[in-house]
Length: 373
Ligand code: SF4
Image 1 (cartoon, rainbow, N blue to C red):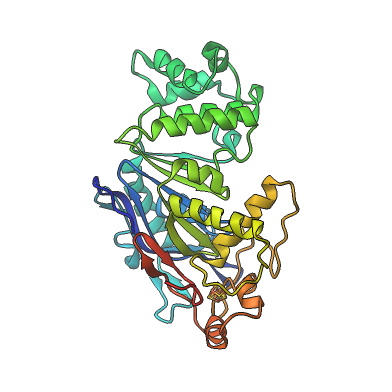
Image 2: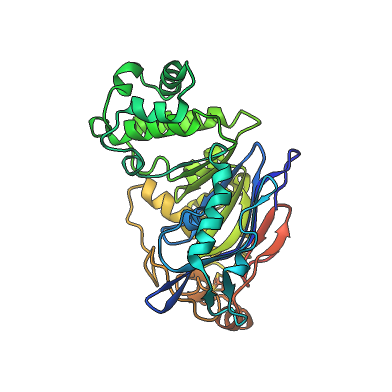
């Protein structure tokens, strides 16, 4: 995995977030390693239900009230957030379930530990209104974060001004319902950053906003990336956003990382797909693949969306968490598996064994039996 000269700020190993949903085990996150470079940015891409949001919410103790388990290790600047969880919740040795000994006790312990990160980690979600209190003005939100600092209002105005508001005074006096969705998201980003956290986790920050706000938010995030003391996790289904902001990228599908690569590799794959398109290559070609079929699908669907074409997903819808069967969890959607060029021995493996991530080059790993190193 990528490491920078400044090292790693936030690292997870073997993170599992499993839920017991009416007797069915849902593996929302299923053995994920991650590293957020200190002073750098990690991109996390995948469709809804891929586990990309749950991964960070669960290690930070922010998951819903469903009975579940978080396992593995998650270390933020030397603080192990999941230390001691085995005293409260145990994984079944078969790997098929878990035993909750004291979930309430674990929640209290976990939250007391993550509380220490309060001013060091900020979160920015897709729905800004759900994070703003509807009966508080914007000013009151800033005051709650900054007071009793005597210059709190000046700092609030400066933070708002950096998000493109020409009249910060008007915005500070507004209630959330008096702001557009894009304005509310810009306010949320200003609030998230006003205490200069070490890490911002931005989850689909531009998905539900107008084009102007999208540009202003991305410009601000790009500017913040120049600060060597600031780290970012950018979670998105949109590779264009990730390409703008991240260095290392991990691609997630149904709870697993299926590919790790660098944004430069994403750009390389994009031009490879464009060239193949221009050359009129058949969708099923027998050249060696160097990327996971799901990464290719993401890029192709993004290109279709950009061209205004319908996005077709064969063999299973987007989004739902599913119980895991044997073999590769992507195979119902995999064009390679469904085609005729796949080696029969590889095909059998796709059906029987879940592929693990294999390193295939510097900072690159892929979980696919068919991908050539
Ligand atoms: S392991 Fe097989 S089914 Fe899974 S992505 Fe690779 S080719 Fe497709």
